[in-house]
Length: 437
Ligand code: NAD
Image 1 (cartoon, rainbow, N blue to C red):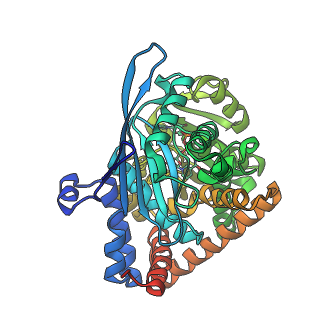
Image 2: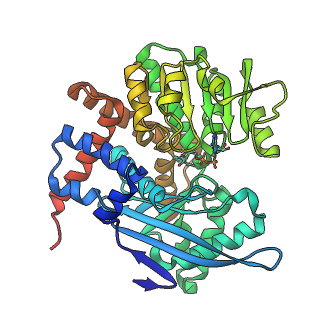
């Protein structure tokens, strides 16, 4: 199907999936299958969730600063909308592929179901390195991508948000471009087409820090159950972007000690601890953690081997592999990133008795506060920071208790238990609504 220069592709066929072998999307399927066995999920719901509902691929031209025209390909995968409008971030990264976006979209479906907010799952991305383009080039690329997506996104249909390589400014460009495609009398509706906007442009207070705040809330719940005090807690962080830096800054405010950080530019440690606020300012100025004054540069293996209570992966997928999992010297892996642990890494962590707060629970703070932003936009409301934090913590604490209870009653790990809770929620809606016709 082609509309607005948009190609809507068929969901991946069995044949395609066979060829992709151990693809990221297949991995999500395997985790779902494991949890489906635990809950006795119906075969119909298993089949529905095994394929994305819709996949959009667009190719569009962008004029570069020197006058050249370059072609870019962008994706939007809409995995499932049984619980509400499709919801999920947009990623700008050289590693973006249709398989990765497909997996990220499926994770959004289970994440929203797990924390019980009325959204489905989607994800988008464009394969390019934002550090190689000027800001005006990224703006033109964003606007052209949104124009190419056309009515495949919308406040009641599919609501994007920031992810790796995109931020509040990107979301403001999306609102402005989307609004320009609507008739004048409908443009006020455009605000709710994305979440994660700047507060001055219709965003919600607390959204920027929300994912990091959620990671910290979950670590706090786990620490309380373990009898650990956050003021005595030591931790390391991989990825010092929106998620990692906010988690670190909030943990600092609670008295915990940041021992080391790794990002795309390298890894640093400091015996007495790193100042997360000063490091965030250094990253803002220089683009990465390398060269942070007073810190010692270390290698990848040394970073993974540092003894701490908690490791927070907050960069990309597949960082905790069998190799790096065997180096880890921590009690808990709190997954800020989506899919940071490979199945082999997971197995090593299980063998070694290292607990994992899984991504779909641990980083759900972002989509929960996105939901609050969407509700505020549609209702013309403005909640204050305390209200946002209170509601966020309430939802996360409920999800944490539900997952913990299922884990204990079924004798399964946190990840399987979290998927089991999510799948049961999705099954409930299919049972109640039935399958058309
Ligand atoms: P970001 O672009 O703000 O930051 C990404 C960080 O990862 C940067 O510090 C970058 O240097 C680092 N990084 C990239 N490649 C690396 C590598 N090879 N080794 C080490 N570090 C590397 O992105 P973000 O929004 O903070 O997202 C990080 C993760 O959290 C992603 O998995 C994303 O899907 C997930 N997530 C984000 C949100 C959100 O609200 N932004 C919500 C839920 C989940």
